[in-house]
Image 1 (cartoon, one colour):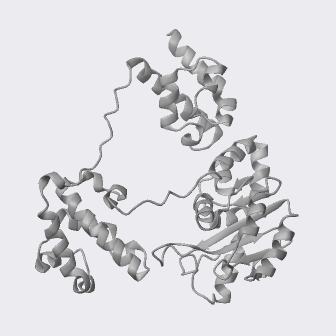
Image 2 (spheres, rainbow, N blue to C red; image 1 turned 180 degrees about the horizontal axis):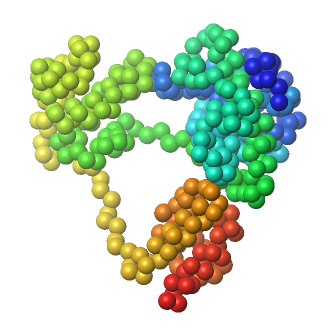
Image 3 (cartoon, rainbow, N blue to C red; image 1 turned 30 degrees about the vertical axis):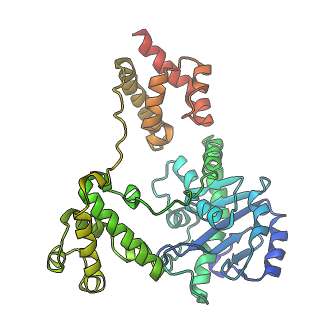
Length: 386
């Protein structure tokens, strides 16, 4: 591999350049890519750079200067081209949200590292351990929407993509030696199908707020008023929600319910500047929520009580867990990779005793059915015979 600090890259910021590199990437067998977004700095996040690299070229595509990225779709969708990405979930959702780009034939190097049993699966740790190269993470949390971007930030962005192909080749070789490559291919294929959440209205923001389920209806009413205020201010100022008021502040105010500026200050929740700018509105909204009729208060929806497992199902869980943990130790991977607890519960409920029964358990991936199916049925047959 070339020293990636000396690897030349091209900026793609015109339609003609984009058309040119698309025609070149269509001829490649393997492409690595990465992206940079601005979620730390704006109300509505967006993809600000797309880095793409092959063994022959390294480019940075600037979507903020291009009106149309549709010509990239065939490259990403082409199953004849392997796509290398690290920790692909966020990138896949973002590319689909902003450009309706779908990705086929994905190989996720983070999944690969996990399936090899590596403890440190971050890209910087893998590049250092496997390629003996140190990555610069100085610009990881910068605002990528600013233009023009300084040369150092562009170099930082370009470096992430070019190291992925040699890293993937090393990980692939190790996976083949352990006969786990097909496992990673299937998991990567499943990951490539994730999509961003559907846009919804802004009513009942408390339903999507972590920790709101523990609040009383009255506190939920206060929380909803504060969340609506935060959403409105963030949209107007084009800033992330957490930079307006923190989630911790929202919960604390919903519980304390200060009804005056003095009480608000005593909560030690907001800064003097925040109180100066928004204090009067906040106390008025809290008072509004406190005066709402009881029958109009929001109620957090509770899941129906899960029925107790049948005794015979409960008896199957522990032996399955023991088998799972022993198998994970033998393979030197995390137990949840072998089987999650939810999958074990499903297996225990279905009680599969043969290959056909195993095939019917939708929670099991194909690779798990092939690798562990006989072991699982053997464990359950032994329980049934005892």
